[in-house]
Image (cartoon, rainbow, N blue to C red; front, side, top):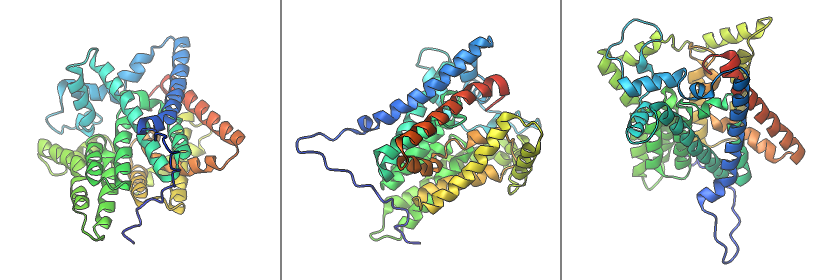
Length: 388
């Protein structure tokens, strides 16, 4: 493979008129950020109205339930000191960056740790949306960047972007790390990969994208020393936490032993296929499980389209690794649509298709996506009534 295989084909940007000022990065991203906020605010409004009719409060759903509760517990009490034998009980399965930020920021900010955790997630979601726009704009122009951001906002389980979860933080790290790779900012790319590796188990996918691309860049002349540094540094966040868990539990496979206690092991995809088969052949399957199955199947198709579109190598390595981890794991089935939320490059084929479509078709598609996302933003916590 050529050392230039990972380089994007950049769309030419018209030169500004004489005397005109080129808009700054934030101003250029403003339409995408406004679209993002509008989509997520729509979902929040539907959730609020539906919850009010059922006599339920929105705040606990967003800030203190399910995984958010685990992160708040780590921020307050720290990690377990031993492996133990209880299933679904060891908090070392959760990576440390988000609870560390909660503990640090809540020490100086007003409000409860729960409000801090939710605020961090919302801020991270805006940074993620900006990074997604920047990458789409870099590759295909401003319109694609806006559409890509809007599609990510309208993800069926986009509710978690504004919950006390780690998906928004992870997506922000991944988006800006990938952007840095494509623009040759190797040390920034490695920094993003390290932070992603401290945020979620799938952070290794960001590290793989940076390291593989950096190693290919080493074939260039003159020798890019920063690329070599990035290749070495990128996996350190993920490896550092996994190594720390090993030391804390007193066994080399400590982190993987923790994952087994959460019934999470790699099985080559047999468990995923079995669960898909069960869901699709049921007479009256749970709607949310049908959604999860549809997202998994659509993601596989979109990855194939991404390969056919010859996306830049860092994007393919990132989404391919993420898909491989999620599809070949025998973990709990229902969160897997959420696990794929950071895989925003998979939406690039859809964004490109919409740019070539008629305004009417584009409006209808986006309206349907936003309405579906808004519906499931309320359905998941109120009807499914379990973790997304």
